[in-house]
Image (cartoon, rainbow, N blue to C red; front, side, top):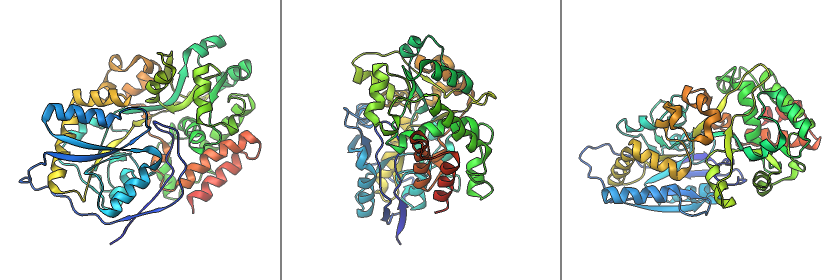
Length: 432
C-alpha cells in the first residue's frame, strides 16, 4: 500500500523560510508494538532540523539524557531547507530515524497530521505527554480519532519581536490598537518603521497577515477554519478577513512597513531590527536568543502582541516550536526506548532544560506569570490565562492557501492587488 503526503512550504520558524515545490511523499510503514515485554534498546536514533548555527536543542538534550541514563541517542542534524525532502527519502527507503522531530498540525510533510494519515507514527503510550500539552494546542498533536501521536516541546509566541530601544527613540509607546498604530506610523514616517517584513518571501508576509487575522477573525470566531473546511464560509465573504486586509492596506498607506518592504529578504528584516531602522519584526519568539547571539550582545528585545483592533479584540498566537513522534516502522525495542526518553523529557526539570536550549517557554511555566521570562512581560497575562490560539495555517492542508495569504500583502504593497483579489486568491487556492 502506498501512502501519500503532500510537501508543503514551511513558514518562517527558527530560521529563514524556504520555498518548496509540491511533491508527493510515498512510503509504507510498519506497525508499532505496545508489548509490555519488549526490552527498550540501549540506544536509538533521532532526526532534527538545523539552521547550522551550533548544536541543536536535540543535540544538547540527547547529551543530557545519556549523562542521566546511559542511553545513547544518535542524533542526525539535517539542514532545515532540506529536512522535509531528507525525511521523505528516509521514510520511503525504510531508513528513517526511530524518533522524528515533527511540527504540530497539518501544513508540513513532517507535521503530525500527514504522518498519522500515512500510518508513519505510532500512538504515544502512557500519559506523561500531558505535562507538555496545553488545551489550546493539544489538537495539533492528535490524529483525527483524538489519539496523541507526538509530544510537543516548549511554547513559542508568534508576535512581534520588538527592539524596545528603537521604540523609545520614537518618543511614543508601543501602539495599543490599530488607530494608535496608524498614528504612530504617520508620525515616524518609516524613521524608524514600525514593522520590517520580507516581502519577497511569502512565509514572512503570511506571518504578518496571520497575526492581524488573529485579532480580526479568530478572536471573534475561533472555529472559522472548521467552518471553511465545512464550506459554510469563504475568505471573500468573511467580514473578519476583509477587515484584516483592509487594515493591512491602511498600514501600507501609513508607511508602517520599512522602505522597500515588498522586495526585501530575510537578512534585510533582521538587519533593520538590529540596526534600529525598524521597531519590530513578526518572527517566532525563540529567535530572540539567536538575534542576541548575532548582535554579540544582549539587546533590549521584547515580545509584543500585534496591536488590538479598535474594538479591543486581540488574540495572541502561541504554539509549540516542535514535537517528537515515534516512527511506526522502527524496531519495537527502539520504539520502547524512544518512549522512555519522551517520558523523561516530560519531567519538569528536563522539559525546562530543553526549552532553554530551544528558546521556548516550558508549559509548566505558563501557569505563573512570575516564571515567564521578562522578555514576555507584555504577553504574560495572556499566556497565563490561556488567551491564545495557534497559527491559522496549522490547520490548513493546502500550501497554496498559505502562499496566497502572504502574496496578498505583497501585492497590496506594490499596488498590484487589494483586499478583494487577496481573498479571491485564497479561496481559489483552497478549492484547488
